[in-house]
Image (cartoon, rainbow, N blue to C red; front, top):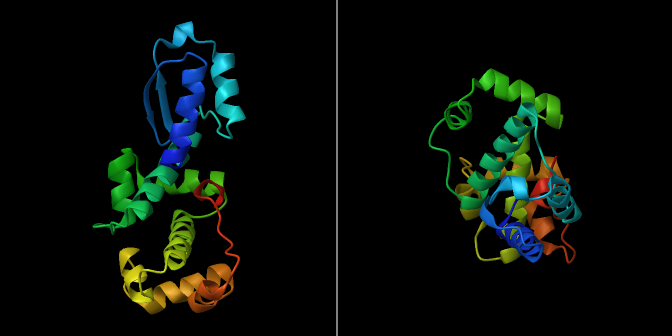
Length: 178
Protein backbone atom coordinates (compact mmCIF):
# COMPACT_ATOMS: atom_id res chain seq x y z
CA UNK A 1 0.00 0.00 0.00
CA UNK A 2 1.42 3.33 -0.98
CA UNK A 3 -1.10 5.87 0.27
CA UNK A 4 -3.76 6.46 2.90
CA UNK A 5 -6.50 5.77 0.34
CA UNK A 6 -4.96 2.37 -0.39
CA UNK A 7 -4.96 1.55 3.31
CA UNK A 8 -8.59 2.64 3.66
CA UNK A 9 -9.77 0.56 0.70
CA UNK A 10 -7.99 -2.55 1.90
CA UNK A 11 -9.24 -2.13 5.47
CA UNK A 12 -12.83 -1.78 4.23
CA UNK A 13 -12.53 -4.93 2.13
CA UNK A 14 -11.05 -6.90 5.02
CA UNK A 15 -13.75 -5.60 7.40
CA UNK A 16 -16.42 -6.72 4.91
CA UNK A 17 -14.91 -10.21 4.98
CA UNK A 18 -14.99 -10.21 8.78
CA UNK A 19 -11.22 -10.05 9.12
CA UNK A 20 -10.13 -7.97 12.12
CA UNK A 21 -7.28 -5.64 11.18
CA UNK A 22 -4.89 -4.84 14.01
CA UNK A 23 -2.57 -2.63 12.00
CA UNK A 24 -2.34 -1.49 8.43
CA UNK A 25 0.63 0.61 7.43
CA UNK A 26 2.47 1.24 4.23
CA UNK A 27 3.77 -2.16 3.19
CA UNK A 28 2.51 -4.05 6.23
CA UNK A 29 -0.74 -5.68 7.28
CA UNK A 30 -1.35 -7.34 10.66
CA UNK A 31 -4.62 -9.16 11.23
CA UNK A 32 -6.10 -10.65 14.38
CA UNK A 33 -5.44 -14.37 14.77
CA UNK A 34 -4.06 -15.30 11.36
CA UNK A 35 -4.78 -18.96 12.04
CA UNK A 36 -8.55 -18.38 11.93
CA UNK A 37 -8.29 -16.54 8.63
CA UNK A 38 -7.88 -18.57 5.48
CA UNK A 39 -4.64 -17.52 3.82
CA UNK A 40 -6.35 -18.00 0.46
CA UNK A 41 -9.16 -15.58 1.40
CA UNK A 42 -6.67 -13.03 2.70
CA UNK A 43 -4.53 -13.37 -0.43
CA UNK A 44 -7.59 -13.03 -2.69
CA UNK A 45 -8.71 -9.81 -0.98
CA UNK A 46 -5.23 -8.31 -1.13
CA UNK A 47 -4.60 -9.24 -4.76
CA UNK A 48 -8.10 -8.33 -6.00
CA UNK A 49 -7.45 -4.80 -4.77
CA UNK A 50 -4.23 -4.50 -6.76
CA UNK A 51 -1.76 -5.29 -4.00
CA UNK A 52 0.67 -8.17 -3.65
CA UNK A 53 2.00 -10.28 -0.83
CA UNK A 54 5.75 -10.14 -0.46
CA UNK A 55 7.27 -12.93 1.53
CA UNK A 56 10.93 -13.34 0.58
CA UNK A 57 13.56 -11.33 2.46
CA UNK A 58 15.09 -9.67 -0.60
CA UNK A 59 11.71 -8.41 -1.84
CA UNK A 60 10.85 -7.20 1.65
CA UNK A 61 14.12 -5.26 1.80
CA UNK A 62 13.46 -3.65 -1.59
CA UNK A 63 9.88 -2.74 -0.63
CA UNK A 64 11.12 -1.23 2.63
CA UNK A 65 13.54 0.96 0.67
CA UNK A 66 10.71 2.08 -1.62
CA UNK A 67 8.39 2.77 1.30
CA UNK A 68 11.02 4.75 3.17
CA UNK A 69 11.79 6.88 0.12
CA UNK A 70 8.11 7.41 -0.73
CA UNK A 71 7.37 8.52 2.83
CA UNK A 72 10.43 10.78 2.79
CA UNK A 73 9.42 12.49 -0.46
CA UNK A 74 5.73 12.72 0.51
CA UNK A 75 6.56 14.34 3.83
CA UNK A 76 8.63 17.02 2.05
CA UNK A 77 11.25 16.72 4.78
CA UNK A 78 14.78 16.86 3.49
CA UNK A 79 17.27 14.14 4.30
CA UNK A 80 19.47 15.31 7.15
CA UNK A 81 22.21 12.77 6.41
CA UNK A 82 23.61 10.96 3.42
CA UNK A 83 20.99 8.62 1.92
CA UNK A 84 23.23 5.57 2.30
CA UNK A 85 23.72 6.26 6.02
CA UNK A 86 20.00 6.83 6.60
CA UNK A 87 18.95 3.66 4.78
CA UNK A 88 21.58 1.56 6.58
CA UNK A 89 20.34 2.83 9.95
CA UNK A 90 16.66 2.56 9.06
CA UNK A 91 16.89 -0.96 7.61
CA UNK A 92 19.69 -2.20 9.88
CA UNK A 93 21.57 -3.54 6.86
CA UNK A 94 24.81 -2.58 5.14
CA UNK A 95 24.20 -0.14 2.32
CA UNK A 96 26.12 -2.27 -0.20
CA UNK A 97 23.62 -5.10 0.38
CA UNK A 98 20.66 -2.72 0.18
CA UNK A 99 21.96 -1.14 -3.01
CA UNK A 100 22.74 -4.43 -4.78
CA UNK A 101 19.39 -5.97 -3.81
CA UNK A 102 17.47 -2.89 -4.92
CA UNK A 103 19.26 -2.58 -8.27
CA UNK A 104 18.90 -6.29 -9.03
CA UNK A 105 15.21 -6.32 -8.17
CA UNK A 106 14.08 -2.93 -9.48
CA UNK A 107 16.46 -2.63 -12.42
CA UNK A 108 17.36 0.90 -11.34
CA UNK A 109 19.63 2.39 -8.69
CA UNK A 110 18.23 3.77 -5.45
CA UNK A 111 19.40 7.25 -6.43
CA UNK A 112 17.60 7.13 -9.79
CA UNK A 113 14.47 5.81 -8.09
CA UNK A 114 14.59 8.72 -5.64
CA UNK A 115 14.93 11.17 -8.55
CA UNK A 116 11.86 9.64 -10.20
CA UNK A 117 9.91 9.99 -6.95
CA UNK A 118 10.96 13.61 -6.62
CA UNK A 119 9.98 14.36 -10.22
CA UNK A 120 6.53 12.84 -9.66
CA UNK A 121 6.14 14.90 -6.49
CA UNK A 122 7.26 18.00 -8.41
CA UNK A 123 4.55 17.26 -11.01
CA UNK A 124 1.98 17.10 -8.22
CA UNK A 125 3.18 20.37 -6.71
CA UNK A 126 3.18 22.05 -10.13
CA UNK A 127 -0.44 21.01 -10.63
CA UNK A 128 -1.40 22.43 -7.25
CA UNK A 129 -0.03 25.77 -8.49
CA UNK A 130 0.68 27.27 -5.07
CA UNK A 131 4.49 27.12 -4.99
CA UNK A 132 7.21 28.67 -7.13
CA UNK A 133 9.74 26.45 -8.88
CA UNK A 134 12.34 27.43 -6.28
CA UNK A 135 9.99 26.56 -3.42
CA UNK A 136 9.27 23.18 -5.01
CA UNK A 137 13.00 22.53 -5.44
CA UNK A 138 13.73 23.49 -1.84
CA UNK A 139 10.85 21.38 -0.48
CA UNK A 140 12.21 18.36 -2.38
CA UNK A 141 15.69 18.85 -0.89
CA UNK A 142 17.37 20.21 -4.02
CA UNK A 143 20.23 22.66 -3.62
CA UNK A 144 18.81 24.86 -6.38
CA UNK A 145 15.87 25.25 -8.71
CA UNK A 146 18.12 24.64 -11.70
CA UNK A 147 19.17 21.24 -10.33
CA UNK A 148 15.52 20.13 -10.10
CA UNK A 149 14.77 21.69 -13.51
CA UNK A 150 17.58 19.68 -15.12
CA UNK A 151 16.46 16.39 -13.55
CA UNK A 152 12.83 17.16 -14.40
CA UNK A 153 13.69 17.76 -18.06
CA UNK A 154 15.90 14.64 -18.23
CA UNK A 155 13.11 12.55 -16.74
CA UNK A 156 10.09 13.95 -18.59
CA UNK A 157 11.57 15.41 -21.76
CA UNK A 158 10.04 18.82 -21.04
CA UNK A 159 10.70 21.78 -18.83
CA UNK A 160 8.73 22.42 -15.67
CA UNK A 161 7.12 25.43 -17.37
CA UNK A 162 6.04 23.30 -20.34
CA UNK A 163 4.64 20.66 -18.00
CA UNK A 164 2.73 23.24 -15.98
CA UNK A 165 1.05 24.53 -19.17
CA UNK A 166 -0.21 21.08 -20.19
CA UNK A 167 -3.92 20.46 -19.98
CA UNK A 168 -3.45 16.72 -19.60
CA UNK A 169 -0.83 15.90 -17.02
CA UNK A 170 1.04 12.64 -17.31
CA UNK A 171 1.62 11.46 -13.76
CA UNK A 172 2.49 8.00 -12.52
CA UNK A 173 1.26 6.49 -9.30
CA UNK A 174 4.13 6.01 -6.88
CA UNK A 175 3.86 2.24 -6.97
CA UNK A 176 4.29 2.27 -10.77
CA UNK A 177 7.51 4.29 -10.89
CA UNK A 178 9.62 1.12 -11.10
